[in-house]
Length: 343
Image 1 (cartoon, rainbow, N blue to C red):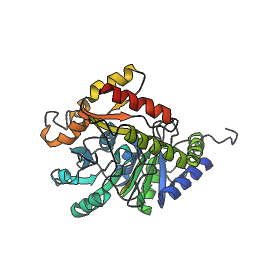
Image 2: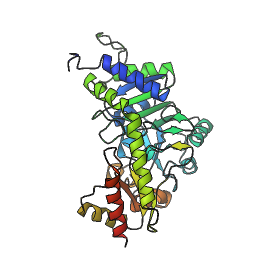
Image 3: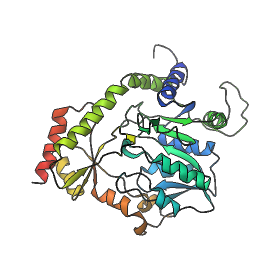
Image 4: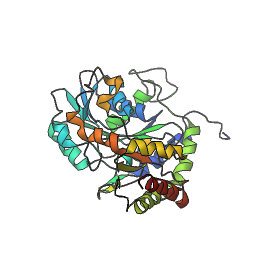
């Protein structure tokens, strides 16, 4: 506030520079939120009407609505039962002459199998847009997620690893995509102050106030990640003797930055209610996209045979808090209540 610059300016540029250094990304721009970051990324890749984009069936609805915002059609595919990430074997069955892109979602702070995704995309000549909304600090074989495909999109919503309240970021690898992103997010022009607009664009900017918050968050990123990982590890230790649940573990090639601690359990609905009654807030796993009422015109909600793993994840998945302000006694209380429920 003392800098007297409220709109996008020097703080935003500093925040972008630090994010690109963190990710080892050559280019990047901001967006108002993660969903619009995805839509902007798709438009910059020339995804449009008549195109289809492969999207995992288990993810936040914004992954799919971003495709619709770009004028294309999301095509849902099942996830892998163990990793909870997009299953490329299922994606093979979804390819049509209209398939233009695939959107791996790095769900729950775990990297999707980007080796398999990139091989699949090369084989079918598809663009790759990474939904890394939950992926700050997450790597796959040493590379930061969101920098492996053509574009990668991040969110700074309140529940993400770092937050600016609202906000998003798009990383890309090539100067031509970067220039399209710059125009699309800034009313179709590159430089502010000019009233000549070569293309149609939007106001997808952020503010320096948000960027200042983001810069402060980045200074604490290592501490935030360490606390979340410690809370995840403590849950695993304290729940290890409970035969009714399985604490999700990331594959060895993914540096896990837990978005939540994911449990798979027999009575997830009942356990969630029990914990709520005892003052512990949890979240259910994502409702399968093919069943979402808002997608009834593009997907058959009764077509469950193709989506067994995402349905199972919804029915058995429960997400526990791991936010960095939690201390060992907080985690121990949650674990104790879970163990008591199963006695």
